Length: 540
Ligand SMILES: [Zn+2]
Image (tube, rainbow, N blue to C red; front, side, top):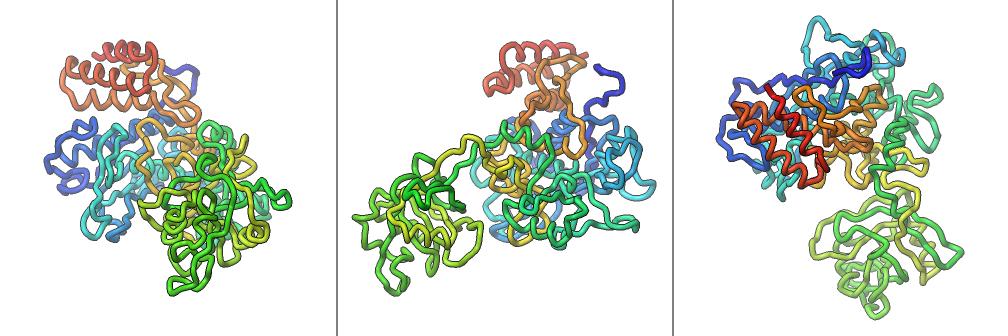
């Protein structure tokens, strides 16, 4: 039921199955036991169920009177034994200056343009899909992230060595809905897509360089400045109001590395984190900083490189240990610090530059936290030892946003053509669905964090109402500020129960089981379980 005249209703996403008839991908008939609440009995069916789940969820969240056509297929994508492109997707075509276009001269992806225009603007010739998505059909083969496999469960309980297909599908459709810019990632130039001259787009208009304080569409900003911002971590941020407002609901407060004594050098210092060991916290990373000393030997000539076992264990035990970058790997240094009794490691860079990159390497034996600071900061510390330092939680600043509260976009120093600019930064905590790398902690079935807010900033209308099933109001918010999509989850499960059962009795049993699970996991609270079942009972 429409509440106000002229308001758009929930969107419908329609699958254009590119694998139909091929026997592979979404059409793979290989028998498969139901997994993680996914009732499908073949590989292809489980994949289609996950895909439909994601489309139902996006359809519930977004408003559009025009169906969104999503092409999907499994294909060979870039692979190595240790890395794989999991999926790729994007809008299939763009449009500008259509009826009701909010801003003149800007490009909009077709799904959004259709929604805003209220009619299907499809080109007369060519592929009618609004979104084209591809998924890696080779995942887990010896040459493609060997030992990994897709997980087709709908419960968010991704096992080790698995990639959650729902997270990836949700992410890829997010790109196709407009979480992408058309700008050149290398030159920063706007594209000329119709021979009328370079133009920006609805995504890029929200990008901002927080060093020169210019928006990407500001006429004063040059292509070279945009390119520099896109390869400078921390400098590229999103200034759209919905993301900025909702960030405080989603992101943790920022942890800062702070020196408290001596007073002359007190303050916050930039740092990079490590891919090994514990994450730094106020509890595990605070106290006195002392210099780690090791012999000058074949492992490393410097006596502060920590490439050999430390010779001043009695001085470093129980303290934060400062060592220099160079000669040996970070995990070698960390193990030597840990074995000497150090509680945490600070690596001073050995070359100038800022901000400090992360410390790479993996070793499960390392349990202490480690960070890297700049060469300048390292020299300052060494001239003032002993230094009292540690991590503190900011009362106001957010992890993943700049000091003005604008959320960071992905801007690695080396441009990654498929990732730079069109993702949130990897520094967001907790991780966001639209970061460039999937993490098993993500729970796309109930939480798409700051993605709806970003789409709103590009011009999408979001469904602010309750989940409706069988024309009945379940009272569950489809999507709440901060991106919890509990009501969308209800609608997705109603679709699964409708399409994978036959007869009202089996459907009701499926919804009853859903209610029990959803109450236990907090997706439904209070009498919402009863409301969902009352709505389920209205099925004809
Ligand atoms: Zn992506």
